[in-house]
Amino acid sequence: MKISQRGAIPPFIVMDVMKAAADREASGEGVLHMEVGQPSTPAPSGVINAAKQALDGDLLGYTLATGILTLRERIARHYLEYYGVTVPAERICVTTGSSAAFLLTFLAAFDPGDKVAILRPGYPCYRNILGALDIEAVEVPVGPDSRFQPTLESLDAAGGGDLDGLLIASPANPTGSMLREDELRGILDYCRNHQIRYISDEIYHQITYGETTSTAVAHDADAVVINSFSKYYSMTGWRLGWMVLPEDMLRPVERLAQNLFISAPSLAQHAAVAAFDCSVELDANVARYARNRELLLAELPKAGLDKFAPADGAFYIYADVRTFTNDAQAFCRQMLEQTGVAATPGNDFDPVDGASHVRFSFAGSDEDMAEACRRLQVWLAKV
Image (cartoon, rainbow, N blue to C red; front, side):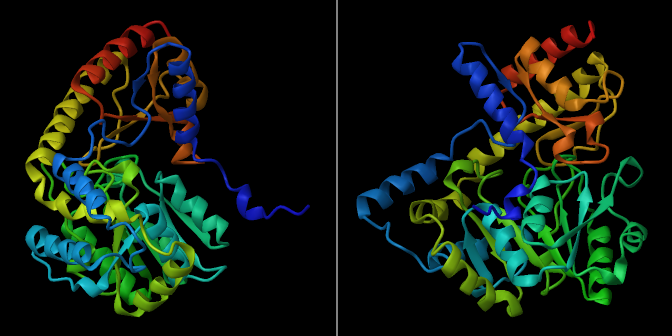
């Protein structure tokens, strides 16, 4: 029987690390989780209460493919309250996590053979989804010299006017680096001048440390903005995200969503309306991430890990491990086996230079992060 080559894309390595960690836990051994980009806190209490009310009210049938109106209106209000930007609810599409939003965007905006620039290192699923759709992922190498964000010169080097799309996350995964507002404006101008569709991954907005975030929709009505309830709102398993779409993509995305997904999970949609009123609880989570970030920035150098990306936002430290290894996958396997600390090898984010880096997530508890640092210091002193 024939098997499509679309399934021959690389695995999402962090999921393999999660499986290895789960196997260790199943055998009775403990794990300190620094591998997965997931808050260790549950959904906020207001969301849980709203979900219970939705269950009691039997509101869980199919919804419109673009999402329930009350949620789209609440998301629109969020843009006005948080960014000072007016976004009509009609331009918002609710999706099954940001993952579905990326798939819908790529399908609606690009054809097979088109070229979409992504950053390296960067979130691996961009590259893998594009590959499955026969869209060429053009990698733009970024590093410490540009704070792990692109310059206009690097975009020229990647093909400039030959590009059909550009996708940038700010704050970024795995580096936590951010575009400053003037940089964002410059890149948006570049995209307009070269007729490049700009896609802004903003799923780590509101998780920042001294920097402020700017949404692309404030500066360019043709940009696609993708966000999620998974990170700041601590709702990973609820599988809910959203898009802010330009006018020309509204109906194409709606048609694709109707056929591919019918609708995002109804229970999650009704519950998520309450998420925007839970900022006290959610900001307390961000305060904990900030403490953990300071802890890792202070303690990882004591373990010999003293070179890392800026970590302006999100909840990751992307650390250079060349002092110890050029095989991050083997390094992470040994780390898990010998210390119980699970982390993600950089190969996931950078197929060229990632073997010399490891991503540590600091979304766990204060106690787990402190214990992980202690174990790493002891372990690496012997390596």
